[in-house]
Image (cartoon, rainbow, N blue to C red; front, side, top):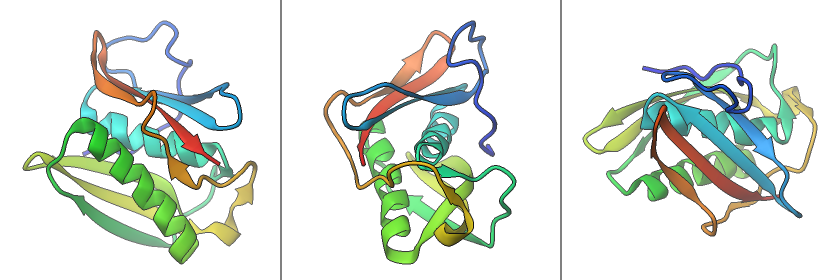
Length: 153
């Protein structure tokens, strides 16, 4: 099981087993990168990266826990589906994740989102509206797993 953690140094000097995430400059949109020892941790880091692009959740305690089961799919599909689920919950329920756990489950993903009300966090940027398929990347790398995705805000 993995609980998302603090960002590290932006991938510089990365060691096997390190995890983290960051936003990178991208014209008109939000581009996030995440890395971790395994696919599940990398996906959780991607959620945290997306949230940090528009909200300051530091020091915020969750008020509920949502569980999401994503069916077996390609790694690209899992990344997009998970981020789309977070965007859906923002729009439909006004919930924002403050922490994430992800575990492999029969090729799919079991995700635990510790959430709070969007009204209870400081908004620092544009709230994401959609995940772009172009320039999407996720897969193993020399240190574990990494991904990069553009989010339309």
